[in-house]
Image 1 (cartoon, one colour):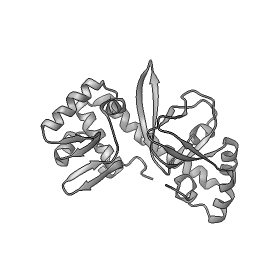
Image 2 (cartoon, rainbow, N blue to C red):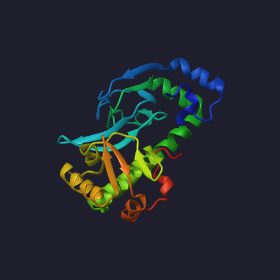
Image 3 (cartoon, rainbow, N blue to C red):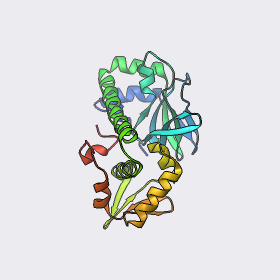
Image 4 (tube, rainbow, N blue to C red):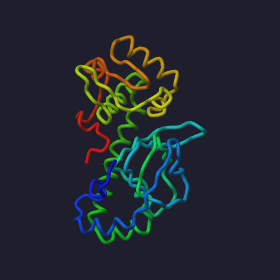
Length: 238
């Protein structure tokens, strides 16, 4: 769990004295798994600093879900709307597991931005990084077939949640096939077929909803036309 405000990118480069001025403005909040913190197109204004737990950012269209991002401790939610001329929420956010967060009111955040310009610069950096991640998602959805989309997404998940165990690479995030399908905009049946192929080819194994990459080189060879360097698959790359 994150205990220091300075560990959040949005407040990096602030002095300890500045951090101490901001801390009293925060309210501690706890959310159970599956709780929806933010609803798309809502007019709520709260900002959240994620201390522990993972969340998904998604949009709905006729009950079909597309997952835009997975958020982890150290990230901030709601700052983009606070800095925008439009108050409507851009997307929905749901807890994937129990989540602990600090809540900050919009007006307090705007006063912080005015008093500490570096916070606005940090918000800009965060926004650019999110645009980069969304550009990757758009490329997956627009140009790749299901097999290539799936391979790229699994590599993304490894670079963000992976850990190596000898020659096996575990993705330390429980994922079911519906969740995976919603991240790359395909049907569950398509994902099921592709995952079965990967397992038959000795590329991947799935145990208790955890993915294990058995042949990383072969998986990477499927990830054609990848524009970025591998390390830029990190979603929180500053």
